[in-house]
Image (tube, rainbow, N blue to C red; front, top):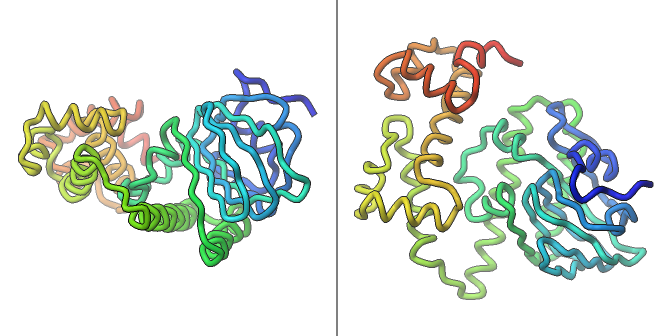
Length: 293
């Protein structure tokens, strides 16, 4: 099989090589009990998809963004779309469960961002993380992979969205427990980020200004903007806007409310203003989005 190119590999090529099953969007693939694949070992490549891999047995060396990970049973490897990936070695008995999904998949699934804290950065940003889980947790995570495999080809996007959100929350809980066991302390900046996301989750329906959230956290807008940028690599305004756009998409697709009613619910002064805001961030009008597949 032809080695994967470092520059031009597509998500579809990776999905085809890994095998398994794709969901209806074509942006998500899952395989269970996967053995090592020589194609991935031959040379490094820019991953066009985020990955969550659970090692079931054997031993594998993975190199993600120049960081080397030694994977044995119970190792969970998470890395983001755009990571430089290489698997230099794997034993013959190595086996994995693996999910591959694009950033577009996460955005289109419209998952509440609270469900991906504190591991959001590992699945939507170019960062890698290894987590070691217990035998009981291997069984729990394996059941998710098996459900994904059974449901991916035929089940609707809302069903897959809810299952995926539950999976990410479960991983987040496992990650948090490891931090507590190690006595790892969050930085002050990370605490502000998590509080900011909580506030945005609660108030984005009505409030879109950075100043409002800074006041809620009793810090200046400039300091809040600096902290959010340093922790997440994104501006505070971009987080607020993404919450609003995701909520608008959900309302347009599933609420049955008119665009005017959604305009009022999201606290836009006029339908025209809401339409311009939505189109600026999505490239499509609210009405056209509602008509889209």
